[in-house]
Length: 253
Image 1 (cartoon, rainbow, N blue to C red):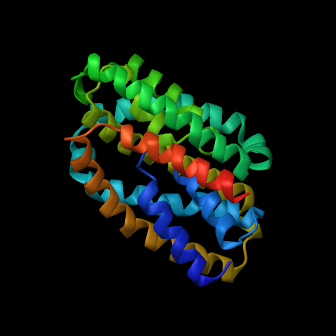
Image 2: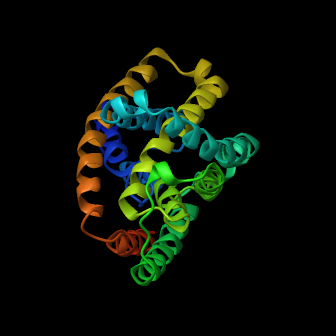
Image 3: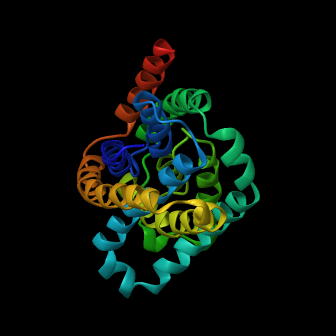
């Protein structure tokens, strides 16, 4: 991996982490296009730079997180199911699921589901705010989010859909997805570094640092833009995008 590769992957991560199109899937596919092999370092790089994107949410929502203790309880309740699934399946995820074949099919199937689900919610709109969300329903959102251990599924899409099924409005579901990403990705990054960080060289840490910073600033732009978008439009366009990307990569093979 070169420095330019790290910058490109950082941009891809920052722009896609919070959109329902799978940042992990896009990173794997981008790495394939750039000719970057899926080594242990590449897999770790793709996970660690996600933390840069997550810190952008901490930055943007810092005052709300600092003042609202009940919000933290809901976030933790939602995180627990995801944390348990991720911990139990860590080895399987790293060794068997990080490949372009799974990503392509996850993107396509997830895209079709996103379109169908959005059409359902057009007829059955939701309007609950996060502060009205019960802890039981918050945990249910976390359980749905755990499906994102499959690369290409999208953590964002899973948690947003889960939030809407639990009664949150689209905008509130998106914001809860942002906030739920904080403990989810901190835990994933910390555990991954614990498992593989001692084998990363100094030059490789340099690449991670570059990707991290680029990811942070790219995500700042993406978060603000996405909130504005979902306040006016549905997520169907992302469903069609996922399908088109999947078809494009199937044709490339």
